[in-house]
Image (cartoon, rainbow, N blue to C red; front, side, top):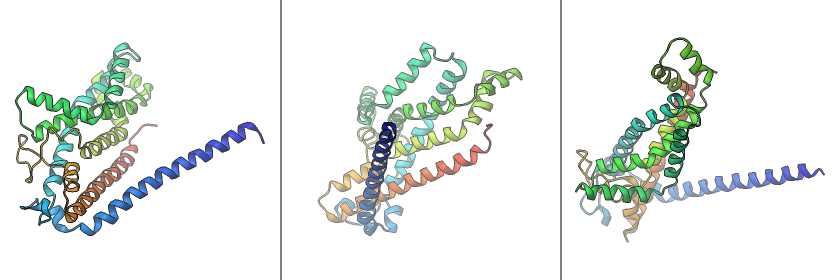
Length: 283
């Protein structure tokens, strides 16, 4: 048999083994969450806030953590979009291709992407101490926004780079300004990828615990303002698993199941919106 054919077969086997390993791990994780969490799931879990003694096994739910997570991830994603989209459009439309500034910006985002989330949490905590701020929803939003900023920026950047340069040149030839070309041509052409990047960043933000453990605080009530402490699902899971009561530990798996369902919904919405916006792309 040809040597190249043998190498190809070896790598096909390795790829198949890797794929099956990943699938097996995903199935195992989901199975554990469903088997342990489903028996503890009830309507009160998603409709009530913790009552007195909830972490001792008494009545209540985790509505505060669900709402707090949505507030936190939603606000952080919105703030990250306000910063990342102009930066991405600038380095792809306004700046020269492969200029030192563009390369340095992309390198910075790559470095920031690799920084552990706990470092962002420690940085946010240091900023809070400097300005004499309490743990709050606002502090959590800012910290998570910094954490997901490189993720959403690099994802958008890769999508915008794929927009054909001929479309930009045609837009300029018709008399459009760079701003008009950016908003009406580049953003429209890259919209499916941008939506996917936004939802991925939202899902990453809603599932992170380390970056908010020092900044968002924790509360048994739904946050009433940006300066109120906010509970999140990852921290609620952590605190419930840390109790010695089996009933509360079971609720932790139910909370993990709720978080998994939210992430699944985000993934489905991302696919649906991407396929819908793809119809408007010029190919």
